[in-house]
Length: 259
Image (cartoon, rainbow, N blue to C red; front, side, top):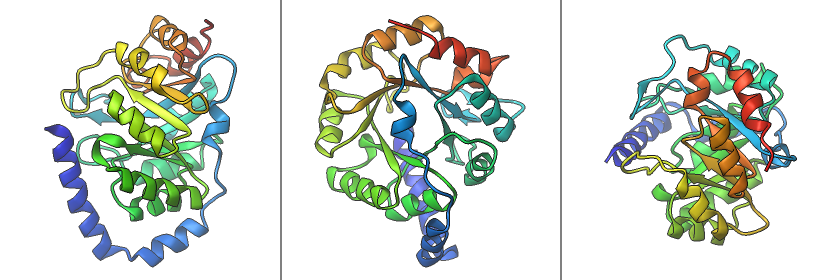
């Protein structure tokens, strides 16, 4: 399974990082990082908020952006009215890097979500150290104790968490962990097949006090409208924006829908 391969590689990377950078160094960098920008506050708006993703490649699609300038991409997203920017930092399967996020931090005023496969505390600390304002916690790769531990640490650092689920059991698990922002991934993380019906089916299970984010498969105004009608507060959009000739215009189109 691709997800298993990604996590296995992540464990190898972590072992190498631990040898190269002491945790005390990361902690010092995290404490001196720029002030946190509130992702949850940014997503609270009339209509549909757009989390626009900087994404170079994916296991299912290969290279998405032939000409890749993460800073220019993020600036275009902000100009289009994005509520936040997601930066895919996994380097082996998605061709991302922490440098992409740290470079974008100085180029935009929007909250930044570090989108990666987090399995250890040092990754949360490392996210804050490079200027991330929020982190992704994927229920499919974390048990309840790990999700609680990582989200508590993120909270101590002032960051928000986007908890990601893709089935009924995972929505219940993240809700029990106190998730305030719940992302429903329309892409099955094991088969990589996409269905917008996934969000519509799972949305009623998300607690009323939490924000609901529809992830994956949102390409058109019609897709965005269907997610809004199903109860989404926000959509996370990557591939279609990276391929768009005018990403700012597409963000305005997606975020301009009204039920």
